[in-house]
Every structure is written in C-alpha cells, then in structure tokens.
Length: 554
Ligand SMILES: Cc1ncc(C[n+]2csc(CCOP(=O)(O)OP(=O)(O)O)c2C)c(N)n1
Ligand SMILES: [Mg+2]
Image (tube, rainbow, N blue to C red; front, side, top):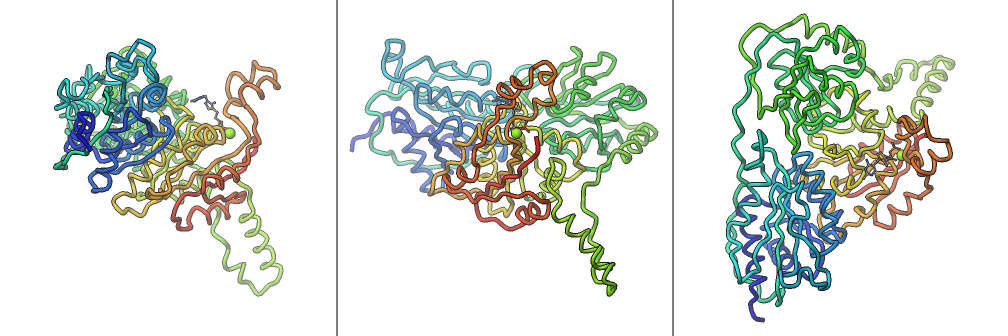
C-alpha cells in the first residue's frame, strides 16, 4: 500500500484533536471521509479515542452533542459530503444556543469539483455559518498545512474569542475538509500525546451590591453556580427543573404562582439569571420588565435581553453587608405552602398485622389501591425523580412532561440535561445515548433516564439503532404515550382550530406499537400502568437499554 496525503493529514488531525483534549468521535460512514474514519477506528483500537458509529448523521450529531454535554469537552462528529453534512445542522443549532462545545468535521470534494455538477458535491464552506463560532475551509492535503487546525477548532468550541462578553461560552466549530484521490492509503505511524482542552479565562466577575430585592433565576444548564449565588446573597432561588440547580435551602416551590403575586414577583427589583429560562411565561414576563435590573450570566450563544436593558456578566459575586432576611423569609414562607407531596403514604404496618380481621382487610384494601393507582403525568415524573440519584443522569424531552416536572418536583441534587437551546423535539434519544455512554465511561454505575412524549420518541426512533460492538449504554427511555402531541391541547391553537383540524394537524394521532419498535431494535421493553410497577422497573438494576412505555390519558 502506498501512502496518501489524505490519510496522513487525517491521522495527524485526529492526533492533534486528542492532544487538545478530544476524547470522543462520532462517525457516519461515507467514502469521501474514509481517511478520517480509518484513522478514527485505528485510534479507537489503541484506546486513544472513543469512537461511536451511527449511520444517520442527524443521530450522529445529537449523539456528539450528548457526549459534549456530559464531558464539557467537544466531541467530534465526522461525515461525508453532501446531504450527510446537512443532517448535522439541528445538533449544531442546538449546541450554539445551549452553549455546548461541538466539532463538525465534514469531508468535501476538492475545490475543482465544486460548482460544476460533480457527484455529491455542494456548497459546504460556511454551511453552518450563523451557528458555527468559526468555520475553516481547509486546504487539500498535500497542498496546504492542517497544522494548527485542531487547536484552533477546540479553542473556538470551548469559547475562545467569543463575541461581546461571551468568553468561555462554548459552541460549535466547523472544519470543512476537502480530500482528493487517493482518498486513503498506508496508515501513518503516530505518536499520541493526550492533553486537556484549553479552557478560556472567564471575564471579570460583576459585583452585586446588597439592597435591591433580588431573585436568582436558574434556567436550562445554569448549573450549581446559581444555587451558590442564592446561598451567598440569601436570595430566593427560582430553578427550572432542567437547570441542574434545583436544590438547596433557598429553592422556591411553585415559583409560577409566586411570581404572579404582587408582594413577591411584583416586588422584585433585581433578577440574576443563569442559563436559559424557557419553561414559564412568568419568568419571561419578569425578565421583560423594564423596572427590573436584569443581570444575565449566560452560558449559551445568544444574549438574553428580554427587557432591552439586561446586563451580561461572565460571573457575579456579592458585596459585603447584611442580607435582607425579611425578603427571603416572605418567599420561603409562600414557597412552603406551594410544596406538593405526591408520595404514597407509608403502609400502615400495624393495621396490616392486626389480629382484627376487619382492620386487616381494610388496611389491605388501602394498600392494594395505592399499588394499583394508575399513573398520571405527575405521578410519572415524581417516580422518575425519586428513582434518580447524583450518579444517574436525567434527560427531559421537549414534551409536556418537562413542564409538569417543572411544576411539581421538589429539590434534589441530580444532574439534569435537556435540549432547551431551541427546545426541539428532535434528537432526544440520540443526545441521551451520548450522555449515557460518556457518563459510564469511567466505570460510574449510574443509569441515564430519558423522559419524553410519544411524538418526541417517534421523531428520534432512528437513534434506537446502536452498533452491536460498542459499549451498551445503561439507558431507560421512558415514554409517556398519550397517542400524539397533547401539548397543543393547552395552547392557543386549541381555542381557534376546529377539533378535527386540531387533531389532524397538531395532535397528529398515531397507533404505533412501541413494543415492536423496541424489539426490532433489540431493546428490552416494559409497559407499565401503575405506580408500583413503575417503581419496580425503575429501581431494578439494568444492564443495557430499556424502553418503558407509560400509557397516559390525553
Ligand atoms: C423539531 C421540532 N418539531 C416540532 C416542534 C413543535 N412541537 C413541540 S411539542 C410537540 C409535540 C410533542 O408531542 P409529544 O412528544 O408526544 O409530547 P406531549 O405534548 O404529548 O406531551 C411538537 C410537534 C418542536 N419543538 N421541535
Ligand atoms: Mg404525546
């Protein structure tokens, strides 16, 4: 075999990516990208890279997004030219808006084959332009150097040079890589130096004076920093279920109702926002108020500025001084009254063991009805929340369940993920497989649970296809199946559309047999209708992939 500039350049590029912290690469098959694919598989065999193969590039893109979400380091995704590359767009958009690092490596035809009707050739340079932090159309191997490309791409993906106040905000970077024949050849010898991804220095923290009546708001991907600030400032914490900050003593229950009250939400003078709030119109309304001083500690690619005078900050600290205990107290008192307890009462063991027949019979009846209680959305999200622990991961789809969970669940320090950058119903399962694989890579015993609706599930059904020779993700996909998109029943359209039109164009009914899908793709399947059965399924130790279907009333 003779050597090829394509293989040499591809192998050095991947070695450089590894040297700059990249650990995961998702690969979709194709001819033009063969040099990259062969180098990747070789690096996987030596343990230098984790390679995940997915035939559908949309699935590949979201899988990479999930890997990046979980590791905080950009995963690379490699595909061939043409529509293959276009399928990476949804994940690229989501990564940009949620501030997740991602490397898009698209193979391309060399320049002389572009724009002349050559097979599988289109305009790829700049194709992710509004969402890629930077795009580089590399020279053809042998004609120009690829040295420096890897470092540049990783730095950009990690948030270097991000515009106006976004230093440290991660996002996608696009390398368009043209290859000329021979597309592969003798694999070059490589020395791999493992390194860490360059983390850009954050900007100066903004000092928050004490005084204004303040709330801390944690939107999607806010992380523990929001809880820390609430603690430091003695301020109430409004934390969405997807924030990763729904815990701690300052957490407020039933925040939507509280924000509507004059003496609480109405009295707010300052709001410090972490992450990207998307789940309630009450928070959006607060952030749109021009009489509220809004400070956004943003972690995604677009500034929050709903009141057109929001200040962006890389981080914040609190000035010395006495906390406003009365303000915090009013919130926590109102919050306590809003807390919801969905747990079953503990069984009455005394009555169950009673020697009096009637007492025992009544106690058994109570127990049986509790065990047989059919599941509704609240009980479903509660059971999943209770079954999930810090070593687990929980991913929400953009179905109704995330809103129900946001409304009723209490505080718990659990790592939560959701694609709330654009709140798409696409890519949920693929993202979760990436999260699962990354979270268990270090031998961690946790389970990744995905809670989503039936349409979100069906949208990403292709993500059930996993290669037989890769590490099995420990994954429970829990589908609340209400036969279509019932979110629309509660939206404006339900009031304007005739019932039949609402059904056909929005609810979009289906009668897909999820069990058969699960079995076709080699997943274990369970259908559960009662709380007791669900608890049992959730807490049983699992070895691999499970689909859990929970029928829900429309
Ligand atoms: C990619 C994409 N397409 C369309 C939408 C609009 N959309 C939002 S929710 C939804 C229906 C979700 O249905 P399901 O997952 O069954 O959840 P349910 O509303 O029934 O709880 C749709 C189509 C979207 N958010 N993303
Ligand atoms: Mg549904």
